[in-house]
Length: 205
Image (cartoon, rainbow, N blue to C red; front, side, top):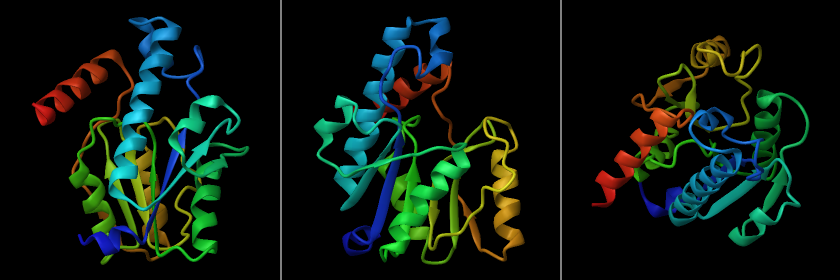
């Protein structure tokens, strides 16, 4: 995909402040709350740095925009606001399209191992699709790319194994063209973290 086209994609990263006991709690079977928060910080920093390197328009959607963690990135901040995950994501999707964006790519911070090529593929797929999703093994997805402010989140039970299936069904019910990337994984558990570290090491060696 050309650099020019990448410049038209608005990337939004949903990110929590690294507060001990409130982030990556499923890692706390191996790590302390403070260590889990530090791991979350490192993951978020990697995801944000990658987006900044690839895309011109990057925004952090923060749970607490006043937290000092977010100031170092030099990026626009937007509050996630209230509501479940679907409501909060839709709020972030709607804003750039209302301002004239041609495409939006929504990310979380649970995939520090994601290759550049996956992001570029998602952005490029918007040439032929209305909705692009990156499936992950637990039944969810690690990214969402949209060509317009479509709402595909109605009735989605977040943190269930049905997230991807229900989101695709919502999109297809609206007559939207859906593209799915290859399956990957999120970092939720210590075993996932080990896999991600292996992926990063192999890519950087």
